[in-house]
Image 1 (cartoon, one colour):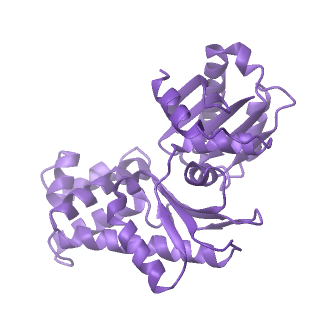
Image 2 (tube, rainbow, N blue to C red):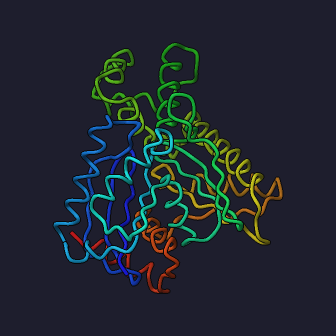
Length: 325
């Protein structure tokens, strides 16, 4: 059995053709495919290019695809599922089911391997999503960068900039973040940051990368950076708790998968999150994913045609996916 899996994010898009043993037959890694951060025509063009590329790599296997699952950022917000499905339908066999859903689902499956749980995503954007024993979905947050996406890379970047400007004005404490960000933008003083921030690029593209410096500076003991991380931890927990409360769970620990670039620094968050959960006596088990999100998309594609992956799938897929150029 062959599946087509797509992981479309705000930074990059991955797509793969794979079987239930973890063998990879075609692979594409390309630019972002979030319709909320790009024109719809460019979005359409990106999806077409991905599918054509996969088809060219292995036309025989492509023609035999049994299922397709695309987990994509932004499609729910713009109700773009039908756009993606219509494009995919032009390429895959008519008998293959095609499902387009939020990328949070494949991020969850990258940790639970298709089982119930909660996923907290903190990448360019942020969203919390649960999938319970009754196969009900519940979403918390992720309502867009203008007023939500709390704890996202973009949100952390905004907090960094707020701290820098407030420190410059005398409204906030001094912070080592100032010198780090000035060097990042290659400017000499704080007012010059404005021109760099309010340029032609999308705000998320400019601001989200600043989040990585919070952890570097916190490591040096900077109180402002440490507080930004602590505040983010609380935001995640509030969202996770709300998601948990809305759903029905089996006895025992509920897995919470922490996914996204912000959680590359998971050691800053897991102890604090576990502390919050223990204080509320909520049985949550925080974990890192065992697969990349594209692996979660593969599992979702097989799940929708009731195919169980082999026990060796995780290791075999990871190796084959990394080796494929």
